[in-house]
Length: 342
Length: 261
Image: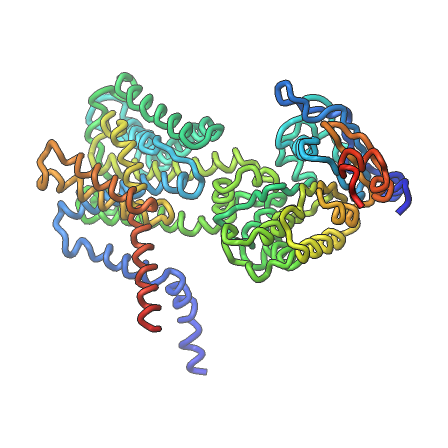
């Protein structure tokens, strides 16, 4: 009887832990403890920034890895969210800035990002492969030039400054530690949602559409509608990253969403690997570290070359990115293990 | 079966499953289908025979909407479906299989069949993982059993053998509540044992499910159909019972090259 009483409440919790998995628990512990050992610079410029760009790449990974649709416009949807924060919240630029509270502005920003993503998705799902890339590249380029030339709504070249993360219940999210944890929560939510939903009915339909859209129609699915819904969810994640990005920078300008940034997101996703939602975050850490420290190694003029060479090496040795390298390594270790037992 | 299978079937069910009214399909100057008139009763099992390029698969594509006919109307259980997109036709109970397997290589066998069941059901956009007690999941398990694929239930489809993929191709058409199925050369590339299994699966289908089967193997075609339509150069040129078709001199000339047993 006593044993029953102690065991019963423990079982669901133990099941949950087992479902989350040891790897995830170790990673969570490390990420939670990271502020204890790191400086403010490493906390925000490396930690927070990697998590934000990891989310952007995750939003691309959702479309490309599961849906087979490569988009270069994810940074543009982040930009939609960022400009929404600037226009509807407070800014220092003396233009617009309605001063709405953060809890109103943030959902609005996500909604605008997701719907604009769904709209661009609806336009581009009629195409496939390289043509989707071209259309979304055109969208990203057009968005950049549009916000740079439009002063009434987007304040053109300088954009908006003075965009501050809120103070909630006395916690100032502009401070490094709270800001890092806010990014960590947002990234964890996005990651867990994608990981869970990949095996959901909608997740399965998306992967099936990637594998064979014709058969999907022949078993009763509206392929176009499913793709557009996927773009909506991808826009939601990109929008969340966009809000965090303007709070990180304290500003948004056309430079935030230029073509270089759009390609950066793609590079992060490819370097990390598209097969698992952890890939974009691994890629983001690598790229952010390189972008921060390559200048010290090879000088200010050559740091992009170093990133380029690293990108080429990854793509050359492992089409599935760093995740693929990890997979190869595990396979080799398993083989060695088998051999040593024989 | 009597010679007038279609008529007797019609009396039983009171409806045509499929009515094609002067359906034609052109690809530029190429006439792939022309003047096809066909009436198939609910529950009827029909074979369509013809040499390569006779227009058999084009006929299927026109019926399912994979591409639209250039001319003519198509009715499914009395409803004009000529202008409906493919998925809407499927939701009305039409199904098809493909000559070259069209499967979801990255998903497991069970997930493939599960999606085939879910496609005509509700909650297609659900972000919840399907439970084992889910109605579609349970139907998928029973179809898995019916087509003898239990042993590869959780295997990614790209790892299956050719025979297993053909088996799954048929399973994909059985999800939901099909009323009429188009089988496009289901026996292509199968071993003799697998062919026997296939005939067994087709003959075990519930009586209300009608189908058209395209089949090059006469032995298979004649054992699973009540009535046969012959196609040549995009036209229907002869219809009859399997016996009539087998013994028709014109058919032997064109399709069997005159030398068939």
